[in-house]
Image 1 (spheres, rainbow, N blue to C red):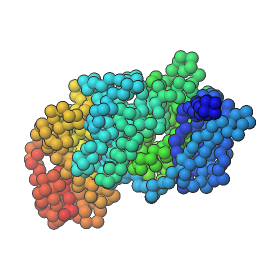
Image 2 (cartoon, helix red, strand yellow):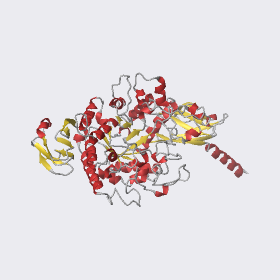
Image 3 (tube, one colour):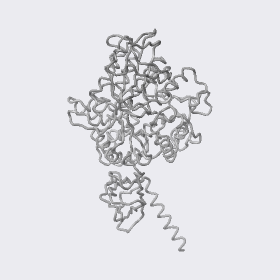
Image 4 (spheres, rainbow, N blue to C red):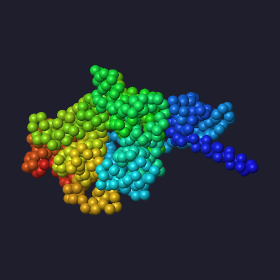
Length: 619
């Protein structure tokens, strides 16, 4: 009889504990500046229970009930807590304790708070994981997920690339000369279609099992760090996927924007008018629709004005920084979120990690908008984003136009020359990110009309600018999407050699054309020189106005001078070097970092063909 009673009690306890489906964040750390912790507890009728913590070093300051009976938010002070676990007890009807859960406080990684983010010494390799390399074929299809198929012929289907595929090729990435990797999101994206890209997350604390496990994500970071490669996480604070578990059971009546309309069957879309963030004349309606409207119908817009949502997102970012030992964050659709929240979000992270880096996506061709979002900008409205870096879409466009256009008074290289002059406006130009393309753009080789020489000029120029550099995977082997301009799926095509049955292998060079091999070698030489060039990392920049189809730029620090010569002339030409007298190169030996030939910088330089020349005084 006692045995039966014990079984009944045990079953009752297990069933009660099973009511708790989520506790987020799953753990925290001691010694954090963010020590007022908001713990989300989700479970059936959980708000009917009274939560308590009996631990003299952990204080339950406040319990917030959601509008939904299935949520509790516990505000817990862990400022004096020590490493270990503490219990959160749940009781009902005055009972001592119906059940409890253990919550772990971990010890921080040594030096965590002083971690270095990415900076102008870094060259970042942007990767779409599903399209880079398939390191584990056993996770290609997960039957419990909404999208169960894999089809490499479908531009918008899953192809099978994963975290393991990136880890397996860290040697290649390192040898190419990259110092950081930015994989697009790998958290669970349990959408019914196009789930490969990761930007419609359905769980902020779970790695998508088709990409791998949390342990494999941590392993990627650890092995990358061993090779002096930083890991950057791609996050989305603006929206979630419509299949997110919240959307099945929303915590509050205002958890997402336009929630009432959504529940009534209407989606209110954003107007995409990003200038409303800065526009003195913008109507309240336009401002609200920009920040609160949904990005697309499948991506519910989070209401960061709700303090519970705001705290959740801030903690989630900090949790991933600590868990993965991150070297940076890239924040998607930056201007679409509530801008006061974004300032607080970035400020909270930078307060915890003063040397960290965050880059925000502001897809604008207007330098005024790009500069507005960078920390330290002297904005007339007093706004400070606390954001260390923004993305230089404006300069990217000018480089493409400058190379595609013929040379006239107002076209060609002068677009690049005058575009770079906009740096006078930026608070910190060297902390801005430049790139030839990314996962949302046509491939640079396609943008430059499959002109190999112009592609080399674009890359050579970008990689010596006073900027953080980012290169999209496959650029080194001339991946293009000319057959379908504007097609996101084709822009994110498979890297050759990432699958066992690939006939061409970009990692080993097998089957590459002469042009592909040459481009790969070119980029490898430039990146590896850049990796160790203090003049490129932090030197002074001087450029001279384009003349006779030639544009010359210098980076200078102490005895290291780097000269970049861009030439559009198809026939041989003699470049007058006396024009650059102020640089102080006359009589010095310089080396071509591509051909490794040396020459004395005298009165003139014969240039035999169109292209880019990069010279250095560094031995």
